[in-house]
Length: 212
Image (cartoon, rainbow, N blue to C red; front, side):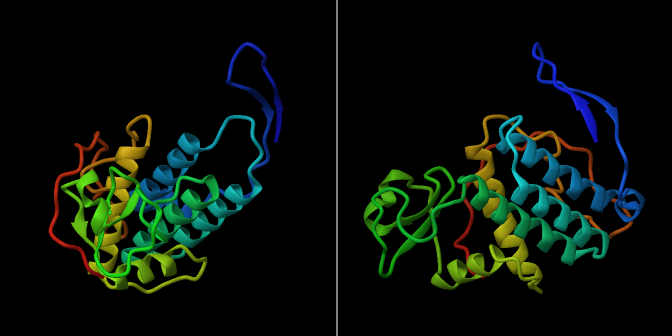
């Protein structure tokens, strides 16, 4: 790729570009294309302009190849793992190792708070009265999803993780994502392209206690 840096705008002028892969599989199925677009927009939102990020580029490229070879629930798992790994690389990851409010590692009672940025201990539950009980096994599941290992998760596990990540991103991002729609980044992938048009999602509402 050859481009010219413009000093008066954030938009650069591309004069030449050699396409190495067009990912035709993603173009043929709108559900997969929707996940790929959402991943790309999240990178654009979290990464500074003109800042080289080879690890993030490699992660995005790897995710595209993974989406091109999978469909249905596998594609949704790829999306979940992409988000967790991207958040870790950019320093925006939720706090899973200790309480997001006091920094202490809780021994028993734990809650999930998208508003506070991760896990809360019982003593800090007052910071977010809507925080929901969190089972220890769910933290282990998140750790597995944050790895680069391709996982085979049950549908209820994927649904639970997606919901909590969506809530977290809604509170942490400065602007709503254009690719955020009723089917939430991939529901409908592999089902013949029935993903719905994007629309801004409402603020998170309380949910039942979560378990993997």
